[in-house]
Image (cartoon, rainbow, N blue to C red; front, side, top):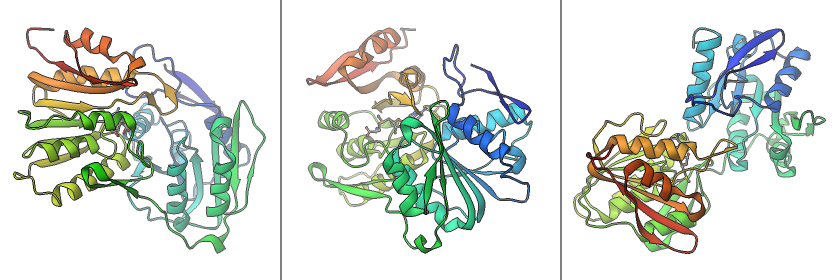
Length: 387
Ligand SMILES: C[S@@+](CC[C@H](N)C(=O)[O-])C[C@H]1O[C@@H](n2cnc3c(N)ncnc32)[C@H](O)[C@@H]1O
């Protein structure tokens, strides 16, 4: 929903992208407002400074601060798109938003670093380590989050990586975290990506900090892997919302000659999938090699209509911190579009999520491939006769 954010005498209209009809969610929260008021009320910014904004979700920080030409550092393609669109709508051009994705190296030295605290502490840890090579003793480090994302462990990360850290009073359930840079702490580097060994498949699984289930195999994914088809006729295959890419990698190992497309909206996910695919397929000898392409994008936007035989999908059940199944629904509807006639969408989900009903409604059919107490693996087939 378009709402107006009023900051420092200016008004901004901000949307969450991709746009949805009747979106019940706002494009900012009280933490965004708190940090903006703090920055403007205390006149902490001037046009000479190099400013870095980290993890802005939809542009609520980048757009009101665009006059300072900030660099924007984050892991989400959806956020990147939202920031661009909201800049375009409010400021009129995009040159003010220079996006650096979380797998890229920073190269400037910053005077001010403004963080929106992510839910994922590993991502925060990785970012703090990466940033500390690009700050000085004078750099202002300030973070904001809703009270539920500011844990003791969050503050400990700032303390141990950046330096002495304090928090502000809570305002509308939001809090600020303020750190002073201790240059004596400047030595270490990020411990990410990390890896674990998946013995059943003899794969070393590499995971960047922001990847789903980065410490061990997700139990839903495991159930999918146990029921992965082999000797399938499907050649053009998509791992949709690939995370570390295990669904696609194991499919490729079992089905030599597959042409895979790995897709995720997280830069770190796609980087992990690329590493895992290249490593697993390089070290295996299953005959015909096949190929893989990697896309950081929103669902199936970049995939041609009627071009895919099989889609493997473990859908997300939340976008950023907002719970909802609209991304799953978007994945299913776009899947129907890009599948060839008789192509199949395979979906793993917790029983209670009710994907069966959705798939049936959309495709006119849905079969259970396998199920256990917790999970169902479903498949729906595209039939041209059914619209
Ligand atoms: C439940 S995880 C599954 C990851 C992996 N397939 C697995 O089974 O371990 C869902 C994935 O969907 C990705 N995702 C969320 N929204 C997306 C979108 N709009 N487009 C593409 N991927 C998205 C998330 O980043 C996440 O990696």
